[in-house]
Amino acid sequence: MDNNIKSRVEALYAKIENEIAGKGYYLNPDREFVDMLLQGLLANQDRYGYLSCPCRLSTGKKEEDLDLVCPCDYRDDDLAEYGACYCALYVDEEVFAGNKEVTSIPERRRRKSSEVSDKNKLSDAGLSYPVFRCKVCGYLMAKDQPPKRCPICGVDQDRFERFM
Image (cartoon, rainbow, N blue to C red; front, side, top):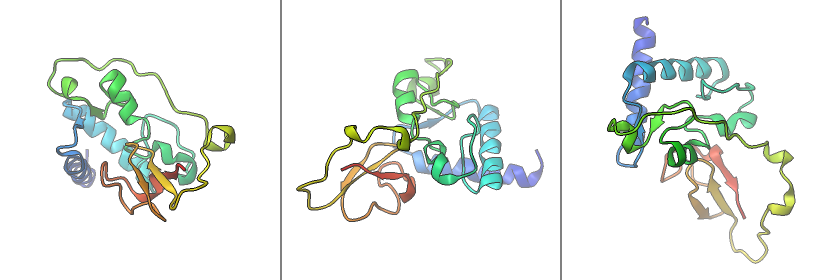
C-alpha cells in the first residue's frame, strides 16, 4: 500500500473509531482485514463520491445506494443477529473481545422503497410535525426537517427518511 493510500486509510480508521467511541460499536479486531475494507470504501468514494459498502454492488447513484453508504442501514440488525455487519467491518463486543467468531452473514438488503406498497405507510394526519427516522440506527425525531447529522450514530441528513 503506497503512503497516500496508507494515510487515507489511517485517517478513515481514526474517523470511524472516533464516531463509534462509547456507542457500543467496535471495528473488527483484524486490522489487516479492516484496512482492506477501508481501502474498498475509499475506492468507492473516489469512484462514486460516497463511502459505499465494498462488499455490495453500487449503482453509482447515491439516491439509490443510500442504504449501502457506510455505516449501512443493515448494520444494527446484522450486529444484533450475527455479531458483525455484512462486510464484518463493525462487530459486537463479543467478537471484538475474541469470545465469538464471525460467521457468514446473509444479505438482508430490502427492495427499493419505490417497490414497497404504500399500504404499510403510516398517515401523518393529526401530527404537528413530520416524524423522521434515521435508517441506520432507527432514531426518531419530530421536526420540520431531519438534523444535519444523527445525534445517535452520526450519519448525515440524507440517511433519514420521513417516517410519519
